[in-house]
Length: 158
Image (tube, rainbow, N blue to C red; front, top):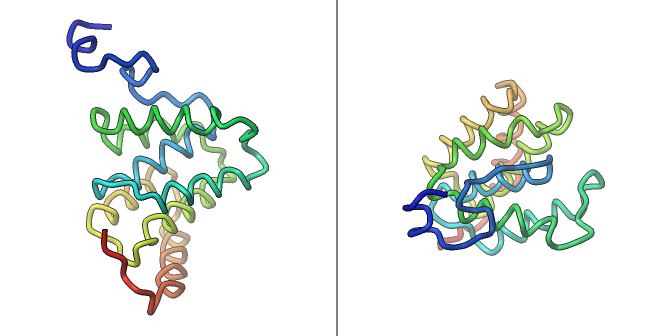
């Protein structure tokens, strides 16, 4: 750890080294945080959505809260220095091929929770689509479904 790392990041929880996923669940958390934070804020509702999705996925070990909170805390403390795209880049290699479309759907759902997609959210979705190698056809279908599903909903303001 360098002199400036010690000065500006005194925690010893691994966050000073950036976000480093070690498994697929960590990668889901990293991608979630990278996308949800592009508007400058990860809302409580968005965080609850993440927790609920991960707990109900049979392929993740959520038996202990540390399995979920460790990567979340690391992502939250690293996003400012890493940025969303680098966090996505570090996470994508851990995503199973057969779960990429599921993850993309989940991220669209998270970003649509307030009823609108802002420009920075559109940009990060395009980046994620490319990074996960989701076909344009699938991405368009996913977006169409969420726009139809949310039609007429109240738009929530922060």
